[in-house]
Image (cartoon, rainbow, N blue to C red; front, side, top):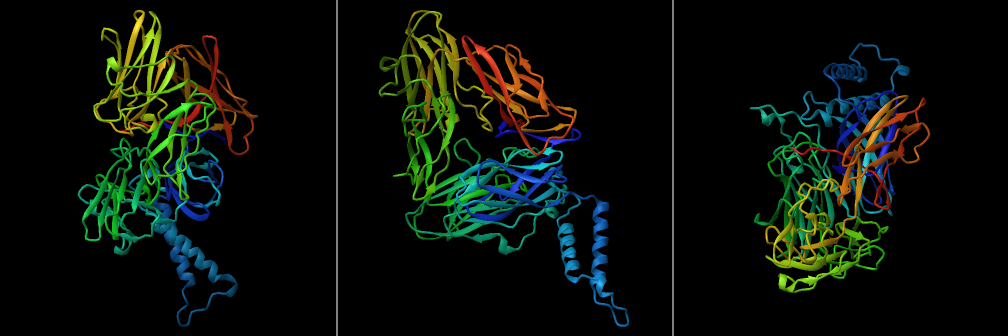
Length: 615
């Protein structure tokens, strides 16, 4: 389930299919610049506005190319031929056209517009759902905050799904946008390949910079640059992070492959992923001064317009490890970071609101920001691992409840913690590692003083984990059988380890709670009609009570009858009703859930999301 930023509602006279965008190119830009982007999608007729989250980014629709059928393109071609005849100088003896009836400049502009329109048309596009085109002008303010945003298109029939749009600080290179790819026919695949001039295959760039491109079927893009001996280069790719799922592709996303060659054509670095993420990263110390060539292609040489990438390259800070991975909310704590070019980097103190949550931060060095990394805040007290603690005999004593910050700091390491419990106590042990970008694939178990195994966990699916497809964090909830001493063991399933294999281990009594997701992230509410959204509940620590769902302070003309998620129920439909008159513009709706957990009153806001199925 891909998480979006807000539940947006647009007015609609009748319920219709939701507008869809499949790609944005380029998928970002540099602060202080104005540039054009191209979007491909479906059901975008009469697109009127571009919505970008956050501050400092404005955008306007410059043009729209609806997908034309054969008859419409034939009529356009006939009109074009007529215009060209009208602007052709008359032959000998022919009467000249009356001056008042001919506007030469206007005719030339109209001819150019029709030629551009017909030139973008293909009879059989490779993917119909990205064959309608929207051209947008984007302006990013010099002081716009850096990082990812969400971009949507608004039409009279509703608001599209969101796509990622990144605000960067480096100079940008953007290849010419691809035309609409042609469907490949068995035995005639070569006819669908993009034919580009040889001069466009390789682009010379100066570091540091951001590279933007699209990969066509069977294609390799090349970039040539000069680097000095001893430079520590970071080459980081956004591909899957731009478009998490491509519905008709297997695997269901663009799988970039990076290869770096020296001036003699020797391969000096390669990457097709970074840890558990499909987007590759190369960390490279330049062995000798000279020219280098970076290539990018899809792992199985697929491609079309929605195989979009952004590559940042330069001597930039890149964080590979954070310790601790979190802290107690309200306490003063600045985490330590490791990685490339991060010595003396400035690390901000993460800020939260006191309730458990994940937050993002970036380290900064010499005016450049690093990659963004997560940090957890929790109201429970923190404790740090103390070595040696890799056996029951050397187990580290802890008082519950507690969150332990530790590391599996070498291969085959195990950490063991000891606590006292009473018969009938319910104990939860939960690991946060993969959700905090740690490479740890945790495994935990609970044993008693006699060594008997009482609970065990490897992986646990997390509905709230977004686009992460490997749920590697462990969790168990169990009841203690007797008074005595108990031991929690943690390690890596593949027996890996290192300073980056950090974790947060929560041990204590259950904290019954829930989180909500509402799907889809935007809807069009018909006048005097209803539209339904699906609300998903992620129940935590054994919470099984009813959850009452309602709209929080809905705007005039919008209403919803509250519904209740019954005990242990995890999904329900919520109907949103429109009034007798269309609302003006885009509205933000908030769905909240309220429940009781013992003596605690819980009120949680639903996070808008889009549900995706991986092929």
